[in-house]
Image (cartoon, rainbow, N blue to C red; front, side):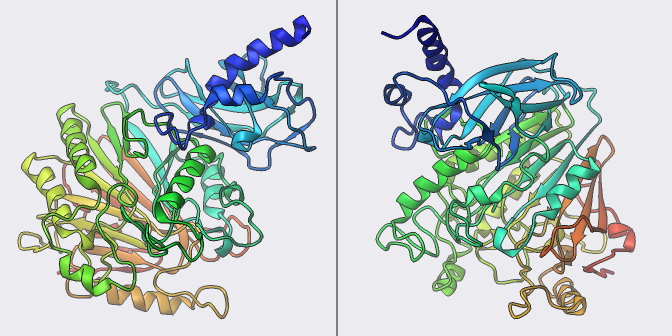
Length: 545
């Protein structure tokens, strides 16, 4: 017979496992991917928790902040192998100096069934407030994780919010270099939130990784994350029925399984390892969602890779995709997501949100680069986006993008550009800020012999050629020599994007350079002239007259 103490402990355990959302990855509505808690409870009948030391090799993370709650994540590892569940207490405080007066805390369990992933929602928070958080071992309160921090959002009707800022990242490829960008932003402390627009991990192993997500812990605690995936979270150049590596009739070279099976495992791992909320919908693999920052801004996050995307360039079919890139029926995101996106844009405008920031994966601008794996491969879909903006007179749309491993800044106009003046920006309907990679090699070229970049003159010549190419009239600046990120700062009068470049990521360091700063004035819907004040420290500015 169990003792009263063990019975009491079991009661706590059975209740607290419900609050670990790692078991719902990606959604409890996807039973073949999520884990049934009743079976977990049955497998751990006594629920005596592990009482040894815990390590936190994968750091801590927060994400998907709302005005009153946030998702907190960590991944404890028992210091000695043990089959028992792990009990952690998450703690949220107003200060990192003392942990005796907590804003909220709770004890929640995790088990080896989810490889000890631990994902909880901390509630009861105050809007637009900065908090610190950590996780402590229930068996030994002196055994604590590193400390992270996050900021809650304002309430959506808050008219007093006059500024908000984001760090924007993409393409963090562990085998190619260190994630110095994350540390630089955290140390400088100039942003409120961190947005990752995809390729948070890469699907191929490198440097002894046994689990891709496990190797990517660097920088998880930077700020509260708002994440969407690109293709490499699953496989290269994904679409609704396959990728460059596999489909449902041919097993993949790397994975040796069908595409659907590979995608299911990848999506499950993504939700287990990252601080992202389960989107409550009958569509279990949906990741597109939005956030509101008072009446100053809406952040609309899209999935232009995994969700019902029509056929893309798989390297062997490039000419075939080029032949159909202008077909009206082609969609980059599927009809359901398209309709949701257009409604979000219109609703943001109707409710009086000043800036509409669209976070998505691939370059939106119409560029003469022959890259039909970008929006150029879905021209009708791009026109429908611009139709929604122009017909509904929606101002202040800022598109933020990643994927390309280079920097691009463009006015956004219709493909025919007949009403667009590249010198003044008149005729533009939006602006795109696309960022380079955190560590993935430059799309302008990479010296594989040296395992590093080419000389700076090589990249400058490539940038100058691109901004002067006929068909690239929207493009105002590009740069491909550095790795890095950009910051987007929004106020009531303007949006400012500052690009930071890191020359080499093959070693850990904090060196970086401000490459360029761009301004979009309220309701201008174009880049302010002279673009970047007429001066950049890297890359090439277009010389439009």
